[in-house]
Image (cartoon, rainbow, N blue to C red; front, side, top):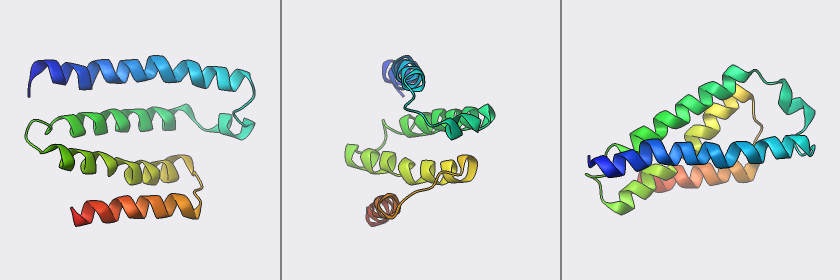
Length: 113
């Protein structure tokens, strides 16, 4: 893997996402847009999801020099149903039928590819 692209995908992108997303979350909490029941979840579950998301980023970036662009996009989309499953198990997130339909469509597309 080329050094520059690895540096961008594994270091710069996650750091930038944290620098952008955490202030948005903090402002949303201060303004009362985050319900109180969402504050009762243990911090280690969010930390576990963050580690898993970082690992997913690494696994997605690792074979990019070997795979064609369209296949990279399809494999990146497969992370959405996996993240839904993890958040259901760890955070007990409830999803509607549209969420499940979207995850099923992504899974079906990855199976076709």
